Image (cartoon, rainbow, N blue to C red; front, side, top):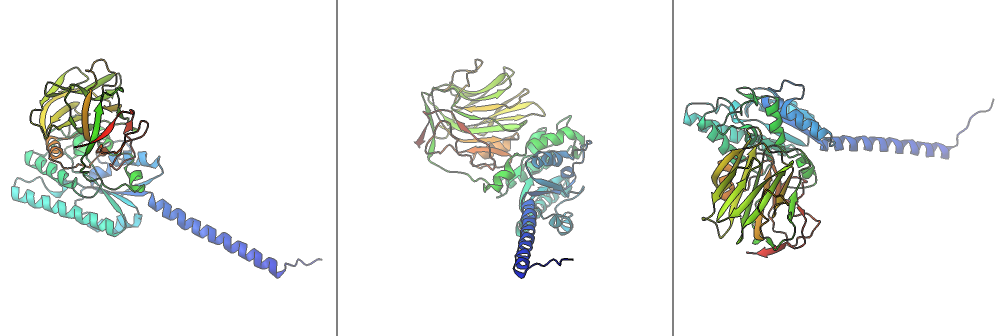
Length: 441
């Protein structure tokens, strides 16, 4: 019988090969675990964040977000619990949130569970401050432990009255001033009094599945991808440059087409023009809505044929601040001009495309404006209320649910390229004209 003999050099070579394979396996496992953690999001909140009110198996607005993001390579876990507020949630921070080792955290708490529903103004003010301080503490803890926080803004309840609604709006404006990404849940199913829109609530404290879906639509789909790409929370860009349109040939000089479904939305921009015509167009299906300047009035021509008009005689160095806001759940469209409500109308809009600087060839609208200056284009995935429209007019940037923030201060506008977008999204404002120019004030 022949004995099998392996020489020492071969033994050494085999050993090295095995060791190398083991090292590759170990480092590959470490890399895969780290990479999985980098793409992990934890939702940490109370009953609405948990999905209460959604009687399907989706899991509420959090479940819809989970479905969306998991198709894009993210892992999403929900460690929310009914009844939590900024105090009650703290014991669960170390025991339930930290073990998930998530890179991002969606914080889903609101003023209702905090106890804002009180007849006493003194108590409401104390609760307001407790919520603010509690949220800031949670945000600081998340950052301290290597997680990036994201906030779902305060939302409606059917037992809210005017003082509670005012506190909710005030808190949301405050959250917009924090250096943190957020989503505007209130604007999607608020009836204008702080209560849920009829047909979109399960009980006094929770939306139904339709309500949860509307809240979900206020979430910017590419926001976490944008943060992974290094985009920061946007800040107000103060520039002396603006976009100049003159003798434009194209009827759609700049366009935005959403990659994902939009229900509620708001569009805001500053404009000045010595001429009349259609300043901007919203296309929805076979219909189009227009924002038109004529005889010192800004007019919104709705899809249903009705019109809303706002006076422009009180302008800031010729600039007019226009906000058009549509809430899908109620079907209410509002026009704000220079921080004032010009009027509302009811219509059903399905946002397909936005055009800045023209009428898109739509025959039901006036001709495209021949000359105009534009700056600070903002497109939101939620409706805005009067307080938010005023905040924009008084030069506060609102970043909740912001999909497009184009200051329109680009040095050059090249056809086929995209304008600068400072919002935390990967959405694009496309340039379709070779005659647009940058101008100094």
